[in-house]
Image (cartoon, rainbow, N blue to C red; front, side, top):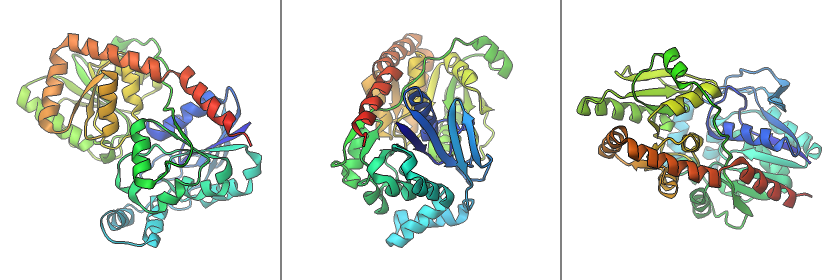
Length: 389
């Protein structure tokens, strides 16, 4: 089968989120099918600036065809449009204008999917939220599979997405929580679906002491991995951590790994390492005492799963139902819903090595049972073979 993944941005420089999920899945399914990727030239989701050249390039063995983004995102207009459609009475035309500003606006990609639809047996779309999926999926609905990576956020309540979720031949969800959310809000229960998630590779053996020496990190540290922006809860995390250090006198550091998309205040004890290679990220996870996942909006947290496989406890934002359920089901972490809970959970995790070990073991067992690549690949093979036209 010839399978095309359609995603808003793609590449080894894109860390975390649905884009990394897409890349890992494409690389694993390439062992079984003729896989390629259709995407834009953007690297940053903030402004969708064209970064990569147009054309086709092989990335980790997978052909990736990139198209130029027609317009960079106007942040001021996008913010205004978001306020309009999320919190005020508005029309469908307002929602469609919001989607154009959301981007990445790439009509050449949409035209390619339309004109070359017969070249592929199946299109796998990541995620529901962007221009690339919204305008491309309806063109190939009869051979489309949607991985929505949806979570409880304002856009999912927009009327334009109700029709989109009725179109795919199949939907793959990350969790039961995600499927229930989408079915309740968008009425998609009639579309065939399965809960699969993403596989997690076992971390390579790394030298954690070399990692510490290279980055000048001694003593215990908590770790955040992912995009550093407001939607991932980073400003709140920084504020909570600064207050925690002041109130408890704990000398623990907070290490941030990922591309910084917003300005952050200088806070004592916060170390910013920027984007790291997969090996260095694995070293950071293995060297830390706890991985913090502060986002309120997740359909699945891959770094939480990576932490679990490495035997590290997670401290997650319990206002995100997916993260809260993950902590409960796996027995691999604690969760907080306010600062006082954050303070007590972090203090407990930093002071109790036996608890950290117990939570780490629970997380490892859970990930090995549910998110091993052999399990994920088998589920996708069964789904894809059932969709053969």
